[in-house]
Length: 253
Image 1 (tube, rainbow, N blue to C red):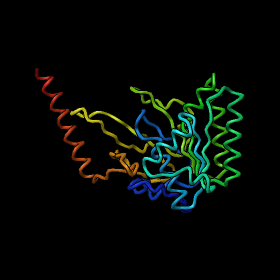
Image 2: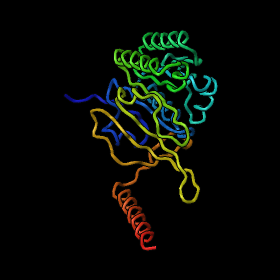
Image 3: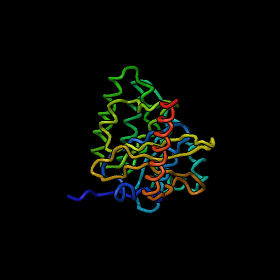
Image 4: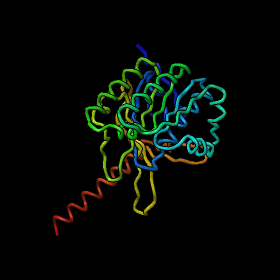
């Protein structure tokens, strides 16, 4: 059976995942602060509404709705207009404890249903988890959310904030339930230049790229900087040779 795919519209990204996200999938988008998680997710939602007539819901936990709208306009994405036209819904929710969390989840579900949305972004899933005291509560919430999203037949992106200096996803069970995991990595090169690269760690039912790809965020939004795999391999080979020479020299000394 052919897997139906949903294009993201993000330049050169869909090529890395056989044309788009598998339909009805839950994607974890993981990265450090400033990696472009919100930009990637907003672009996915905006492209869906404008190019594919796909209605979407953006849930703001990490920042206010006003901040989100203002930052999106920098890329030319007028979410306020789309919301007025009934193509997008933006929820401005606060991080709460267990009782308030259930109300938030109910509101998200009601909005998805009433809008008949096929795309959802939760920014961020990490912020929701902060309202729960026990790890078991987080696991229960993940299961409930996962079941709802599957029934809603939508593509969902759950943003996961990664603290500086760690590689932990932070939620444990969510990595195993997720249909896809995209890792946005930021680092400084030998010239202290800020660099960004994308890695696809998981994408069910997809022969996705196994190589990291650099990406950029400019006036048009998020885009992959396409480098031929051969060049990546040559670069990695040179780094391996250099590393081996350094180790050999160290042993001689």
